[in-house]
Amino acid sequence: MRIKQLIESLRDTVTTAIQVNVAMITFGETEVTKRLAAWGALIAVPTFIASVYGMNFEHMPELKWAFGYPVALGAMAAINVYLWVRFRKAGWL
Image (tube, rainbow, N blue to C red; front, side, top):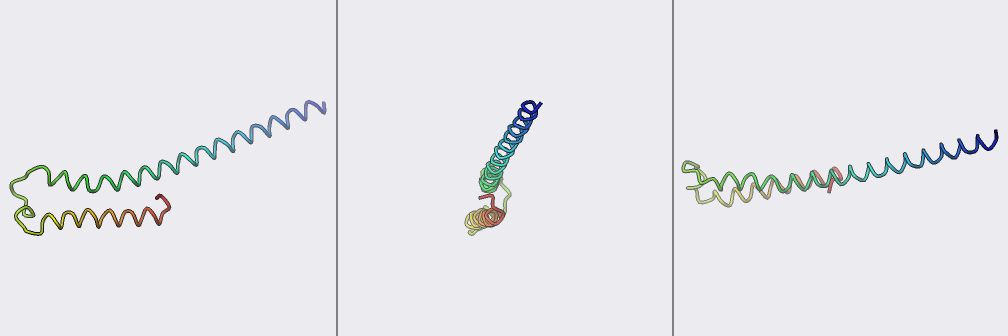
């Protein structure tokens, strides 16, 4: 009877250890997912803005404006800096 209780106790201990290990692995995967999502957002913003300018529209007011290109680059940089700061503050980067 005592050996049976010892075996059950050891089985419970091993089960708990496995559950803790799985939880730690899941937590690590969540951190990786957060980081990948943050980097994806940082890449997506300039890609979107550049893709709009790459469509060769004829009637875009910014194309005839002397500061259109620098403003577009500035907007890309400003949005990425803002996102980087927010993700850094949130602990995603």
